[in-house]
Image (tube, rainbow, N blue to C red):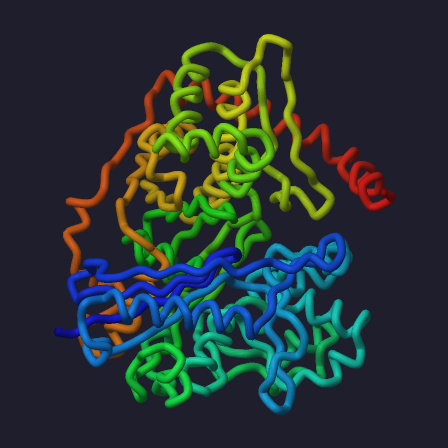
Length: 506
């Protein structure tokens, strides 16, 4: 009986998921992947460590599947986008990978965007540079680590490193290729992009580009030994995790905005023509002639996780010991708090924002009578408000009529309703397990001939999703709060650089 594997490597966890051909999850295995923070604004990971963890997860999933490994007819990977993974001439890691939470190149991106390069990049590549863009990171390496820069033989993305470890071929797919160096009109690499960013040496060293459903190799004998997979099992090119998540939850297409509330605030919609605007990235879609328009910032549920870790750790341990969930406890506190007026706001900008590299998080409007429930409410509303910043931008360009929500936070019905009330669109929450891994598996299955296209999802989507309509009264109330949320951000803009300098001086 044929089954397919999707590998999904995020910023903290890498996982292997085996699906039946009808989309049923047969086995999941996860491994944590530590982040390395050798200096402020530097967020890295060990590349060999990532593969070892992923190989362990694959082996566990294969063993737990209940079917022989020979039933796995295809494999595809997805992983965190942007950042950079470097290889030398011997195809070995050239230092640790730089992941997409890294902001060391923020000053370079800001300088480009304050000058002519930002607008030229937007016109040529469909996006302005940002701190975790491959272009900005590679320029930082050129300026600060010239010996390392001189040794770069290949620069790839996270999922492309996993693909290399699986089957030994170097390359990328159409969606990942468009993070910095493609022409937005032709959807192919552009030497002009390398010249624009002062990276002429790397022109011609970019990874070959293939379609996400194209077979790019077979599992090597060494990888088979490590993982329990069958040598020769086809490996597809895979895709960027933002696109994979939208695909896996049934939200990849025109007229709908896919909202992914994870570490990043990800909001995306597909168009049949390229539209460029500084508020979103216009990147390659899965198929030629498709563009995926992403409005994103590193400002979503990682803020909620931080709140729990910093202020609820004791309660979380007690809840776990008694068989409860800290999320359920905080959910009750949130429901009580949202029944009363509150002046408490939270900017979810611990890791970045749509408002520039110097931004930072903050609570505002607190008084002595506010309790933890009010703070939880402020955090969750702040996350949804930040998603609305991006959804409003996409509405200006593409007029989506509905939204689909995924991410850990979407499993709480109150959160799906909150998003509907704040963004002012019908919001469909899906109970898809491992949406990004399923998106990768859809590409694998298409390449293996199980599906006619990546969007030919075999599942009965209506049976695993619920749609929440905006409540008119709450929508009006949240419109007022949203304007205040933006006013606070505007007032803080001149102060954020000062706060950053104070932090850097410690």
